[in-house]
Image (cartoon, rainbow over all chains, first blue to last red; front, side):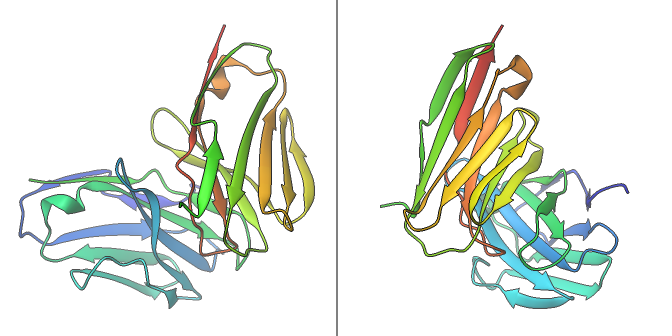
Length: 113
Length: 106
């Protein structure tokens, strides 16, 4: 298996632009997680899905952030409009079910100028 | 006070040394994850445990749910073990420690 796939790997955009991050979980996994990592705050859970349904989105910073999982093999994290403080590495992870080991993607490094 | 405290924050060792990283947490949880983040940024799950001890190769993780404490041990450390090790209490909704940066020198 190719593991968790994220795209793009790097994104540089200007403040105010819409940013869409993409994630393809490991085939057969039914839980998907979006994390953000910054120097100041470390790793933080933004939202997670189980069987394509959002279970907990309490980590989503504000209404500018939204996440969808239209099917078992694809999820997006959208930021609109983006701000410089959104600059971070965004990781997607998947697991084979609630309470299982999580497998992380390589991350998307986002820079908002 | 942070919900997850790791110690030490930084650790240097000579190749072959026995390494211990500690994690204490204040949240009520039934499981805990140990993660490894490589210098290049990639994150790998090392362990998920809910009781007792688990061993993978030279790595051993222990947890005491009642005392809210977990430890990660590395036996016969090697320079390739150099990484940041992150404790993350929780089953699915993880809370992350700030990490322990380990450098192992030949």
